[in-house]
Length: 304
Image 1: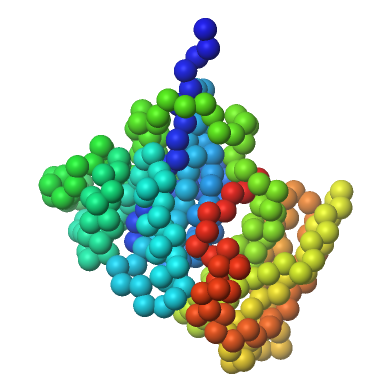
Image 2 (image 1 turned 60 degrees about the vertical axis):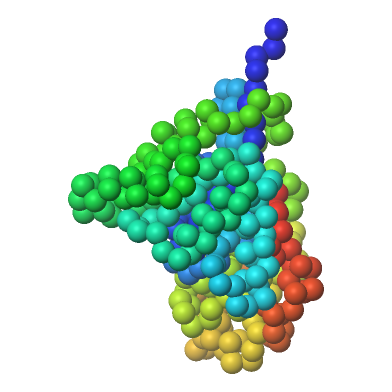
């Protein structure tokens, strides 16, 4: 008699910067989603797989959801993230302060409309000065939504994640595994995706608020040899003035971004990396809905 297996899609939803990508990376013990204090660093819905014995959870990480989506790119990302609700067997709703703001309320309204199964993860509990503050907040959100469970966690330090994974596994539907047991991340285009997101993460971390969401990275050449990755990448910006910001004085900023990205890529791929980067201007790329779709922004991305 074959043992029963349990498998399902688990979506991680929340407003920007609550720690969704950090949680996914920590659970998988592998970096598949870029992290930054800036919102919308996760532009695609990344699939990560966690298999343990007869349980397989297929995680979907999403862009942070904005209650008011002004720009076209924000609208595309919101539509993508909210579309995950209907496709998921289980949802982890993340919040990170001991209060629900308008963005949290917006997401909860959407969850209520869907009748989805939802676990609440209260992140960054390591920053709470007194645990006496936590219990009243848990009681408060119990009245807001019929969560399956409410769990305090610290995604950064891993606190409470064992309990979270147990709860997730207990609510997975009976189903055959979708992927091989040793898989962490599925798809042949993962290398390209990981490279572009690594470079973009370094841009975001290096430039702070100087360049809000106006960059896109595209691989022009990728050649893999036994001991070397040769990568040519183009960083696109929306305006000529932004090009100089990315390049920096005498090219120092671009060199810094390239060096940091190369080190991360060498660590990840476990081989030497030759990385060459250029900066080009493509006007208003992030306001062009058709172009955003051609880039895969807001679409589900499966990685290898």
